[in-house]
Length: 147
Image 1 (tube, rainbow, N blue to C red):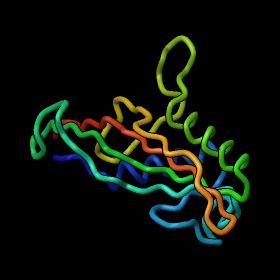
Image 2: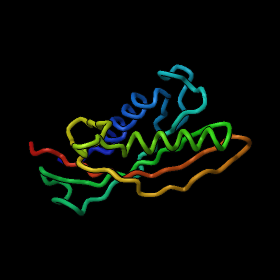
Image 3: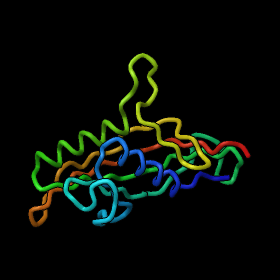
């Protein structure tokens, strides 16, 4: 079974909401009913950017591995606010437990296991009509367990 990018994105979104205590939309800004903070700024928007194989068996193999790319856009009203929010997003994805080296914040997609993660690209801050956005791209190495 190949890796479900949607399941990886949903698990990453859940991790961000849990760790940061702020809403995170999936492909769009959070709505006013999204938990925990609705559409109140600052918030994040997570985008699924696709995946590639190449470090494990090919797609379709019962033990398929994939590198799943996700973009997280932090949204705020000032450059400082959005930069601080982006720092927290980076830390949520990449922080490790002292001593063990394990990631501090688990990402647990249904039917797969995240075995590594890295910051792939960081585009920094842009501003449009008074809204600041900070864009980061993460690569998650995901293994699909044998059936």
